[in-house]
Amino acid sequence: MGMRPSTHYPDTDWNMGEFFVISRFQGSGYGYRVFKKVIELHPGKWEVMVIPENKPAISFWHNSIGQIYEKYDYKTVTVAFDEQNPTRILFRFETNE
Image 1: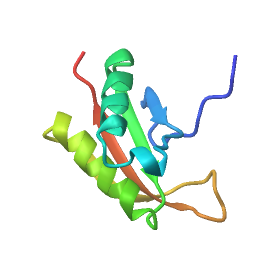
Image 2: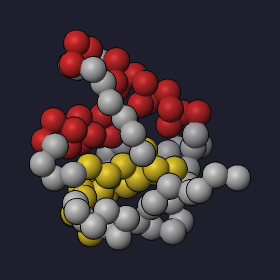
Image 3: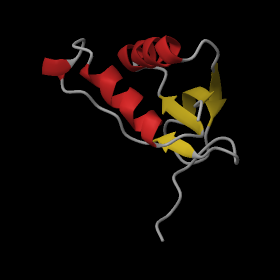
Image 4: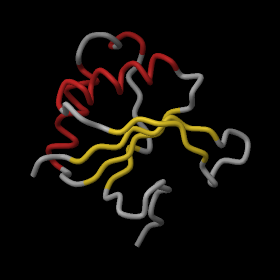
């Protein structure tokens, strides 16, 4: 059994640990479609964390999550798993099963 990825809230079911769209496909809608399919396949409580300096990623997550969910949490948190970059923007939402 593998190690559970770090999450901010203990009741989180899923953490988007890595999500990257190569520049050639950014803005094409592929990232949104992949994100939507992943959450359809894995219902539950989700967390997505982004470093505050990554403005394009923050915008992507606001737009992508906001297209699906009217309400979602968004706040700045401090994480224990990264001493060099402890500040994260945390997106939290729950899928409709």
